[in-house]
Length: 163
Image (cartoon, rainbow, N blue to C red; front, side, top):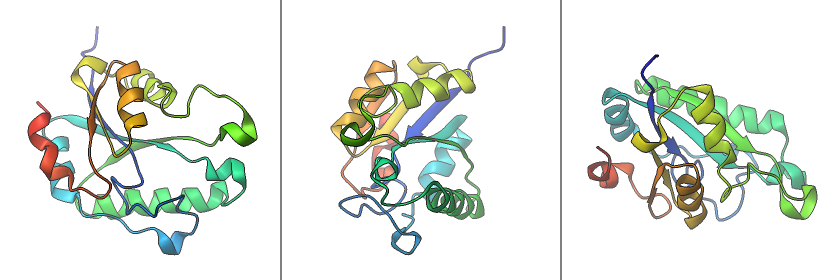
């Protein structure tokens, strides 16, 4: 049986790009944070880097799937230019006030479980870095160790928490 992969899941807003206080609705407001060397180090240590983000603004009609795809493609490209591969993006397009309950919106673990299944990941060797309590709760529910940071806190400051 193939050996399982290990991953660091990353929340998006406040972790990979600047926290705007609410949803980032416009591409012009999307500012990538410089976590390049920290994520390069994790990648060099053998971790897959996977984004898991709530995007309830889609359900609210504040931005479109196209606009979101543009942001994610830009994020992927900027990191690629620094030698970092963001392996995949999992996002929840729902919002409880508009679409009712789903099993992918954090603090539920659905987004992580999708990634774990798709990439044959061992949750016990994996982490989830997020700037909200709900990220840690989602991680724990998926069997992944959650690491809580402040919004826009450099990831380099928590590298020592990752084996």
